[in-house]
Length: 400
Image (tube, rainbow, N blue to C red; front, side):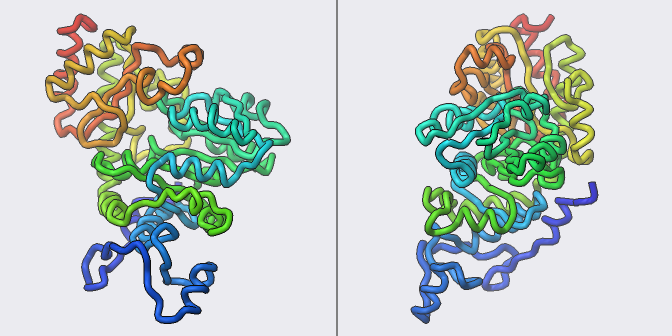
């Protein structure tokens, strides 16, 4: 792929108002005007470089939005106070009463709950399908369908969406393809593969320090502007505004994203290969045993690897809990939800991040009780980590 996202990010330079190498943080909720007419024009969206009220926009948020648009190669990007703030704004902007959504069956639990339960109150219905089958997606589309929604790498089963094929299908039916790329920044560039809208929970890999909750929508300038319309923009009216200090913090952390993603991927590949050799049931897109390994190869940016997320299935929730508790006790990481931290994070998604999905549906999609999702950290000596993790499994009788 010709698009070099890391170069685009590196080329961005901002100066603080006193010449600082970081842009100054806008620490105001409202902004003053010399002219009353300028205020009126700004409220109507007819002025450039003027700010009215921080729920509308701030310089700090615009800087971050420009960097995220450069990351995904889109015209524009809007930032939000959470990933769910971004997701819900997009869905409610695109859908009206009587509309229909085709979604991947394996998605983040909060997104699933929103599509399964909440939008029904507005007579919006969702069909959940196996996103790895383009035919299943095509068969689910109806005249009322307004969105195809998926995750580039699904949470938590790590299914891989064929974004090019889905984009072609969406274009054929004149509906947008919306892709959540939270698990695979830099590794996959959905917009360059044909997706219309790209979403991230910035909380995860992009920020990388587990101290901030935020989200982003990347898309065309027209769509991003529509989300901020004072009369009918979902983002504007829902009020999911990102704090300027958090925006500035994320922008600084983005400068190391290319380094971090490479190391996350390198470590996850090493652990997954070795645990598979040990006879464990491992799912990781970098393994040849992964059913979509070649699909991942065909659409990924190779230098950033297969991502930092892997799963282990050790048979039962009891075993999973014992292992996670012991790994935490031995300082291998944290028994915690979320991902993208410098330390490894592990959780049993069936009882945590995917708990909104009913048990019978978890079973249908292959989400077993013994599944552990691991967000692999930035450990310098990954062989040491592997041996320590294996020792935990031996001590618990999971491995001999």
